[in-house]
Length: 392
Image (cartoon, rainbow, N blue to C red; front, side, top):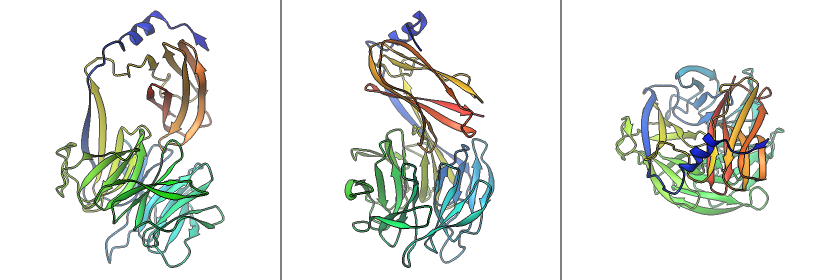
């Protein structure tokens, strides 16, 4: 429903102009699980809002067999599934099935929400498998082979199909951006590629070179993140290829604090929330689990962008039924308002198209959504605003 903006909301919009507050990003690193945990490799966020991490193990022993569930924010842990062979990359499908890469056997396992584990696919030839990523648009799992130097997809029938089989050097990290473009990172060469034309006419386009071995890759908030497993840093990479150190001094240790003084011990797995404000990093060096929190501060009291666009917090929050969403525009604007989960998957479109000046209200029915944390995303030509919504 479209209404005129109330005076109170107009007053809030008015603080956006004409001055632009000074903004700064603060990055803080903290330890979620201490050294010696059961997580040292791939990470993913589940539809239930929990974190899942794999145990790869050492060489030659022990061989990692488990996937651990970490309840957030309490950091309570439990073994979610067992019996793997150097558990590596992880990804969830839309039905809540967890897919696990078995590095040693070159297979992908599927774990149903009921806990049943089965073989999902066996990679062709003697090879290892490393990174996994679910492609919801095509209902396939994207698979990287570490020593096969390829990326393929595998469908529900266990059939593998080629994506890229040349130009890579020990790939592991995989990520999709908001536009469905696929990215892959070389472990041993430190290069990050975009796979243009995926999946029909794929070609590699290098977008960045970190000059260090890359553990895994993640996407959130419009940019990529990667772990420098050998130089003990975590990087943020803009989609145009601009690289910056997000956290880590380069010293191999486990030390909490601001991003520019914090230290990592062989950072490996990485996952980001949809808006990129929180990341989780596993450490291969000592099996500690770290969290990176990115906070934007501003000189003005209101931290919303000064674009004449305002997204208000959803209500009620948490919700178990209907949630009300409100946003305001000070000029006619093309709008996209969607709800996504923490894996970045779009769950519903709430509003789209050209909308007029004023306050806009929408309501959504969350009864069909799994319990967990979701993100309301408002996109306009002026930028992106997000709010979290918890569904019970």
